[in-house]
Image 1 (cartoon, helix red, strand yellow):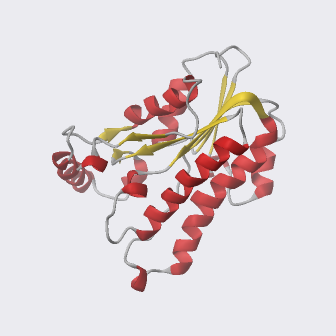
Image 2 (image 1 turned 90 degrees about the horizontal axis):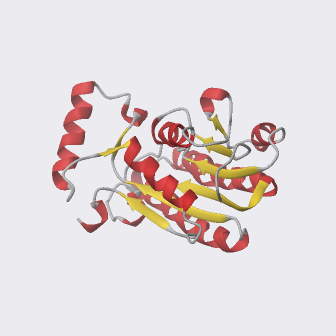
Length: 223
């Protein structure tokens, strides 16, 4: 769908990290870009909050959801189930709630692009919640690509990316972690937000793409 002065793109989770990079990239094109996140008062676990965002906007051409959640680590026997359910409520059910509310606003041939993560298809002990949550999103996207057609639904699956998600770490600790990870990857470096933004633009721009999972992980899945 060509961009023009009336094109409206909404980025949920667009104030930081990958979402901000997507918003900045789309901001170079004609049309309007609206960003929303917890920072702007949006709660994607609350239908009223989502509807308050969408109600005044009219037709939406592109919806990008990068909002995530803090998923607890650890194996099942030691897992904090309440924290695990809260993570699912935000990233999985929150994403579906946004799509359900937005569906009636979407332009025919519009795009919805979700965010999973390489752990959806990488077997790493201790990542049960992240793995199942992201795998569930990828499975849901394929169903939604059929149910919502001609709206196109795709998923970008990031690998380790340098964003504010690691803001709680000291600068030195973060750099060490990123360097260790980069050394294990075929591409020899960690991801940057701009690397990932290119994948969302691909999903938006390619009219022959729906139900796809776009892996941008530095080769993590082939390691």
